[in-house]
Image (cartoon, rainbow, N blue to C red; front, side, top):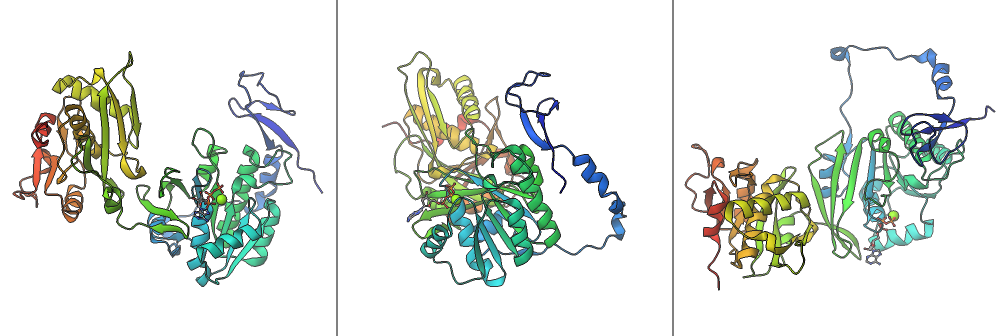
Length: 454
Ligand SMILES: Nc1ncnc2c1ncn2[C@@H]1O[C@H](COP(=O)(O)OP(=O)(O)OP(=O)(O)O)[C@@H](O)[C@H]1O
Ligand SMILES: [Mg+2]
């Protein structure tokens, strides 16, 4: 049998060495050498017989994607309407967040209509069976396998021909071709490549669980994210029971959608109307609390923004921010200080988005500003008020998208004063003349909505 020779390549400058080196002698980068197969070129040229030929676009006759529902509608939504057969999905998230739980729950429905192979390199078959029992997984066609060798897994896949393969996790896989440890860049890359080749060939859908690194990104090479068809990220505060699944990349659907779950003893429960849940524990009559509305894909979600503004005891005031971009918060504070004369530079600011949601959309600006003004002035933002809109550096309130959806959601939840950008109320706007909708063009106008200081 031909021996697979490996070499070490610097991931910074491409310098090749037969031995691993701590520091690249060419570019000086530390810990940059990664093991790779030396004879990739010859492998390719050996297959020169079946060279691909260009094909004319309009003459191509290809079948539609086959999508299967996972039985979990929040997951289907994030995947773009179900899992596409032949695709590879990478699911990543913090340790203990619920990745294995979600995938096991998915087996319940998918196991009724097809064969599933659940490969675990982290847990024994007993552990998996106990979890399945706790989650109440039905008697579908689900096979469990504890294996970490990539070749052995693909061999089992060839024998069983499953419709769905779950790999928990890709970081535990190794191939005999390399001497490097499981989880190394080369091993992860090769395992993902072998499995995606299998997925395209067999039309099976593959779910890969991915660990995260200490910076919070997906562990392993960045190419892993390029190689797969969809990258899902499971997030949430470990201390809270809410879990949010978000698509970072999706070749078969939008990346804006999120799925919301609650973790409990019986596993993850879907939350189809997250707005109600996010507002459930909102305190009444407290300064600094304001309701806002953000679009998460096609769904408007209403959430509560809380801020605490207190006189600082430090030479430079303290600012912390949870669920909102820190730099954006600093920018909004600077705008409020400069344009409205509010002395935030003498105060500490603590901002929090309730429910563990992360607001990444400019439409959240107005509610964050209203919460900050309320916290600063100690004037309460009444419960029936909700605000959304973008704020510019001059203090102007700018238009946002999907205004109609947001207003509908706010009205559904009983808000009677909806503050929106003036420019969103056009001449033929359906909400022109609606008493609940208040258009504003400048942040100064926000003050009139706050109740008087007690
Ligand atoms: N008996 C139980 N009752 C309630 N919740 C449980 C129970 N067992 C586990 N959990 C919840 O499930 C979580 C673990 O889920 P799971 O094993 O799916 O996480 P994971 O993301 O796969 O973790 P890892 O990265 O370690 O594999 C725990 O953090 C806990 O919240
Ligand atoms: Mg797990």
